Length: 84
Image 1 (cartoon, rainbow, N blue to C red):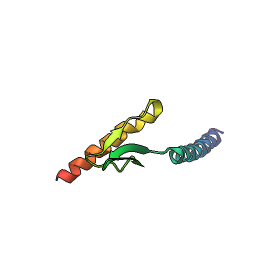
Image 2 (image 1 turned 90 degrees about the vertical axis):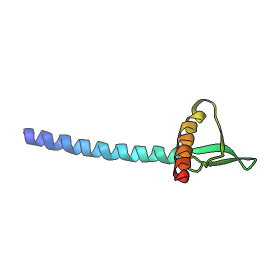
Image 3 (image 1 turned 30 degrees about the vertical axis):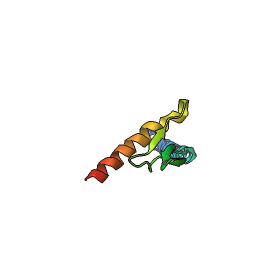
């Protein structure tokens, strides 16, 4: 009896974990990580992974401003890699 309950509990946990992974993948696909930057005198929208030293990053308001930290930290990493 106890072995049956343990098996059913493990099966339910496995199924729930699979559903959670699918949900997280769907959320990741919905997110658009872009940054608005001034590059070469033009204001352009780029992927958050693509800022380079010299870009001026424009901050958004509210939830749109959340990409700023990510874009700037990637820019700092980009700058440190280029100095070596």
